[in-house]
Image (tube, rainbow, N blue to C red; front, side):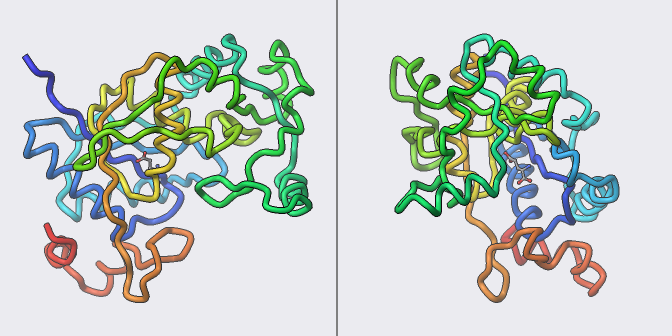
Amino acid sequence: MLSQPVFRFAPSPNGYLHLGHAYSALLNQKRARESGGRFLLRIEDIDLERARPEFEQAIYDDLEWLGVSWERPVRRQSEHIADYAAALNKLKEMELLFACDCTRASLTQFASSHENWPRDPDNSPLYSGACLTKMNSVSLLIEQNNGFALRLNMSQALKRLERQLYWREYSLGNIAADPSSWGDVILSRKSTPASYHIAVVVDDALQGVTDVVRGRDLYAATSVHRLLQHLLGLPAPNYHHHELIYDAVGAKLSKSQKSISLRALRAEGMSAQAVKKHLGF
Ligand code: GLU
């Protein structure tokens, strides 16, 4: 018997939900319903400096207003730090992590003093490699507690692959993962016990997620997720990176750009029905 598909919507409570989130949540719910699958809500509050309780409550309120319903209990990442620590520990034992105390300013300075220094898909300069040989892995977790970040040693990680990695993308088929384009990605920071990348792959596996439906802005990050899944021995879900919703002036909607939030639309008198219709549901 085929197992039941599992979908999830995984917002970060760092701001109010906007139309792009509404589209993602509604599409997840629609796909789950069409396939007789389950639909989970996950609160990605791992960035302890940015997550705020009022934004989490607003997620529940806005989704309810929109008519989205999800299974309880909700997984909140801040309650599962030990799961991410276990995954980091596994990578540490594989000698694939190194501790790094470079500041963002020093890395920007390094990149600007090297002509055409490569950039990652998010347009940040690739890591300089400054700490790559400085620390040994034995002291890693102690270092982490002392304010160091942990990075993945990308070249060592790639050496462990016996074959090209692919992920399955909705309507496009197999996509070749290109994790090297991200360099030595950060997997935990001083202020954040686990990065988005490590938390998302651990949670998708622990929750049995079979289908990840999320915005196109996370398409390139899937290469890192695929690599981490492989290294940690986790199953790879199917992916569907949907179009991004643009506001009237054509800017990509995001919380940092102070896009119109669902609650602002509601305050202006827009109905949930009108929002759904606008988004094509
Ligand atoms: N928490 C992420 C965000 O709000 C989404 C993560 C995901 O869907 O993989 O952008």
